[in-house]
Length: 114
Image (tube, rainbow, N blue to C red; front, top):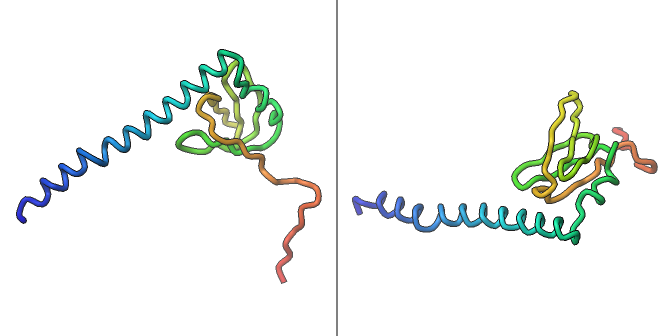
């Protein structure tokens, strides 16, 4: 029982690390598949994203999220400007979800504290 740490390290090397790498390879494979579809003309992400120009959105990339206003779209790159005026470029191949902020919508009820 004095060599339990060797079993722990062996478990990490044989099971945990390969599972993390497999997840990363899966994301890369999906991005390549989307890129191939776009080249063939089957998948046009830019046409869908053009509906969000000038709107405040949250864009979910494979590992994180970016919020701001979509300013322009060229080729496969999206320019997003946040509240501080900082601009970011995002590759549309790695976008998993886009959500518009529900701010300033008509018919939105305000909560009143009593």
